[in-house]
Length: 312
Image (cartoon, rainbow, N blue to C red; front, top):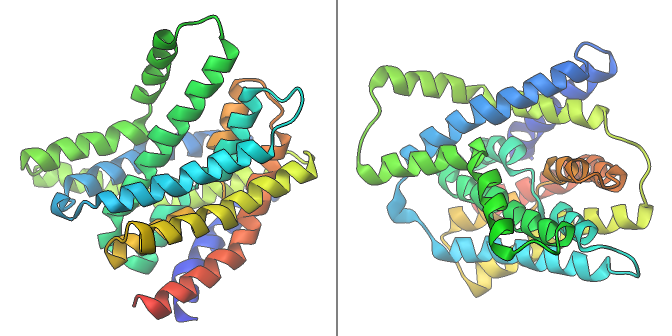
């Protein structure tokens, strides 16, 4: 219970703070966009860069990567299969598959891992973010582009996906940090302090941003579709990931619990933004983000209590 109060409760309290700020019009839609850009382009990349630059690469676990990717792949494919129907395009299937397997890793996962598992969990948490932002998001974009431009060659589609990923600071920042770690260089003290201060604002700002977004979430959406997305994210993905990381590809305990915690997170905002970008109906995805986040207050709290009892 102590772990729930000290680790999970502050995280959800900050999300609630953002929601209340939007509801009482302390912060409006313009503030939501500005704060989201600050987190995505400045503070979170700084946190990811510094953590990866200081990571112990000798602890890198391929079993961990296979397990986390396996959880993503199974959830994505299962969601697409059960969402099939006459007239349903690959674009919509891809967005639904993405929503069911796209954890809110950067905005919510980092604060939770730091609070519950400590700084040592940052390295595996960042790898989860890379897998989510690069492999999952990039794969979904590739499928959508193939569906949208069936007459376009595979090479041009992959080039467009690569360009989109290269412009993503949440991907570039940890990769630059990895270059620093591999080179054996250390940042000058003043520069390191600057990056540390900038990155320290990432967690609270990201959580408040989630609350602001949830307050603006669109109502409606097919209830059956919403239920599938929420069940896939909160039940299927963490269950499959846990089975893989503990029994099929057993990883070190800290890495294994990080994988399960990250997989159990609610749906992030990426699928909603992608649906809007390709002008698809985003109401079901928006509703699923809201419901999965609300329900995760219970599921994440239970998981945190379990991890603290078994791992601590």
